[in-house]
Length: 231
Image (tube, rainbow, N blue to C red):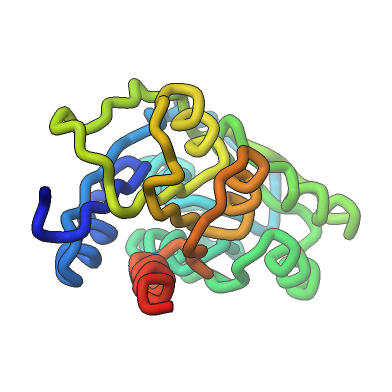
């Protein structure tokens, strides 16, 4: 048996492996298990006139970092959900109008309050329509540009056959894929969700998360799991 608590992270390793590092430094044995493969889409030759840009995932930032259009878009107002995506944008020299809104509804209110009338939504395929719906209800025109696609797996579990002490899910789609492709008795594993939407998807599939991170950051996830272990 491993001497340290074993935790599976159902996601692609980030470029700096920040989630694994956070858990390793706290005494866990952390292992990434990718469930989705990202395919970048060829950039468009041009985009319609807009006065704002919305990015809701770090994957979308990676997809646009080499765009020839990026220079002319930088002068617009940029919006994002969550500090991780905001930090990636700022690395590209793009100041983010609101990087900590947390939810699509809050971000939509911020965009409306900023007086933006037409936004370019840089999205993945598939993506949630919650933000565009909120914006259109507020009479903000939304131009959606698909910049990446996510495709399943293949899902490859560690060969040692050990069940983890913790398993972390990062997206509703990830939950579906893992449930479809594994026959693990999840009652033997403490489960964690990154975000309320993922937690709701888990509950819909009969899984009860013991910990739910308030934001998609290593610190928030580690805090949620350590708090659950103490209680």
